[in-house]
Length: 113
Length: 117
Figure 1 (cartoon, rainbow over the protein chains, first blue to last red):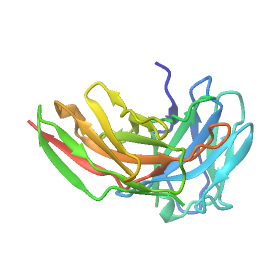
Figure 2: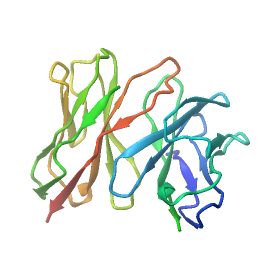
Figure 3: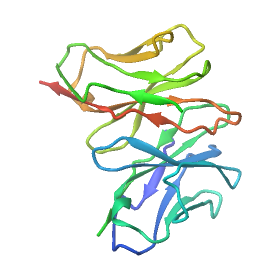
């Protein structure tokens, strides 16, 4: 069964550094999302993306964040200058045309020191 | 804005027993979708079940079923014949659909379910 994949599974970085989190959505899906989950808290929406454009973003998704689909398969989340409070689990999700169900990847655990 | 409330932080159930996890939500929309996701210790988010608000029939998926009460804005998950592998965090989520199916999920805080052998 096709699934969403994410790399790396874990990333440790120093405050102020740039990180890029990578996702490979399910191949026939056209809608892509990033969510994050700070340890012990609920999952929060960051951004949705379709047709090479951001469809919606939350107040969390400020100028430090950007998303890109650099080729036909990858979907990336970049955090330009990481802060301690960016430490969280980041989930990528995708959905197919005509369906509302989002399928999640296994997540990237980001730790900012 | 929509909100999702899961008021029980933790529940425990004996293996093979039945357990019900509660969820309420607040919305002024008439058409929407509700989901239950499971997050085991591996922390991957796994879809358990979904319900379309326009459908009166409660969704079922093997041992998992929902009790969807639209007027009460309640969406509980029943797990029958609980198994040790059901031990996980369970999140209730709401989606207001938009054209193109590119809508965000709004999650509750989750409930930790422990299945005892």
